[in-house]
Amino acid sequence: MGDMMRAMVLEEFNKPLVLREIPVPEVGDDDVLVKIKAAAFCNTDNKIKAGLVPTAKLPLIMGHEPGGIVTKFGKNVKNLSVGQKVTFLHLSACGSCKNCKAGRPNCCTVDYKRLGIEKNGAFAEYMLAPAANAFVVPDDFSIEYAALIPDAICTSVRALYDQAKIEAGETVLIVGAGGLGIHGLQVAKAAGTTVIFSDLSDEKLEKARELGADYTVNPTKQNVPDFCKSVTNGEGVDVSADFIGVKEASESAFQSLRLTGRMVMVGYSPKTFFDVSSEAVAMGERVIIGSKNRLYHNLATGLKLILEGKLKPQIDERFHYTKANEALDKLAKVGFIGRGVLLFDD
Image 1 (tube, rainbow, N blue to C red):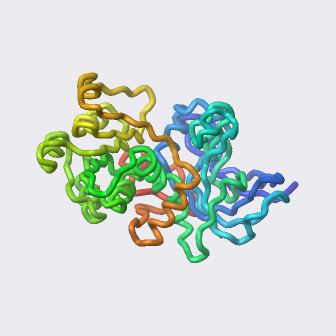
Image 2 (cartoon, rainbow, N blue to C red):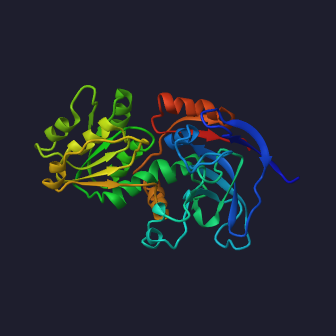
Image 3 (cartoon, rainbow, N blue to C red):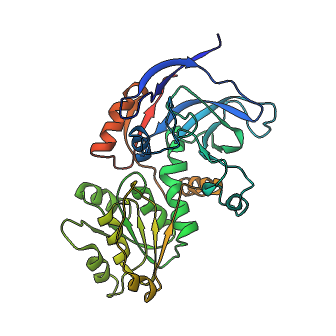
């Protein structure tokens, strides 16, 4: 028997993860084996656990936000060295379908697989991944911050920079202060925009102000579209970003748009719908844009924002890897201001 590793494994939907000792994965010619040091939690993890992601098959090691150290790689891998700190673009695609050829592998229609979802991920001492997906960070860079780059930070980079194409001088509404929104705020500010931040939690709104939000609004106390119009000379915002994906939040985000405004949908909830006025779309030339995951080039942008001091990764709480279930429960019930992070022993 080869080397063994500890992993938190999802063996049954709607049941706690189970601590198991399993073999360390064999490294293929194009693979890299990484010793995981940190892994961040995402709301998608709880959707997987609840059986709401149909492509996730059990048993599964979840975790698609890794920070780790290169320990071994295959013979075809030329651009990595043992000991490097890395994180990963978590998705792999076919490379040949229409969307892949158009530079959108996140919407691959043929062979779309993600670490921690369709393939084993980072809630383990070691993770096997395609070496092409590895993203190297500086030696002196925080491994915990590295874990936040691909999803918590770069989901917003893709949504706001690639999809909504925000520009300096615009006004942006951020809806939802979860792990994504609290970083989306900083991504938007780094682009030179005025940011309005909406959340149900006054504590999260206070954090948003600390991180540079120009205005904050609590939907339980004020009508968000009315508030947005009040601070934009009655026009509404240029861009709204919905990081929640539930009916009330989505409708609020859309209704806050000015004429020709753009709304980018980042958050989602299975089987959730929201109402949009056809007149408001057609006569206002408003646009609703989807944004899924992130692309490899977004990771470089995310790292650059951190290194330049324009974005500070927000880690709310750290958990020993054996406490993964506690972390997922807390995420589901009250959430984190930023990310919860799973840490592994040496």
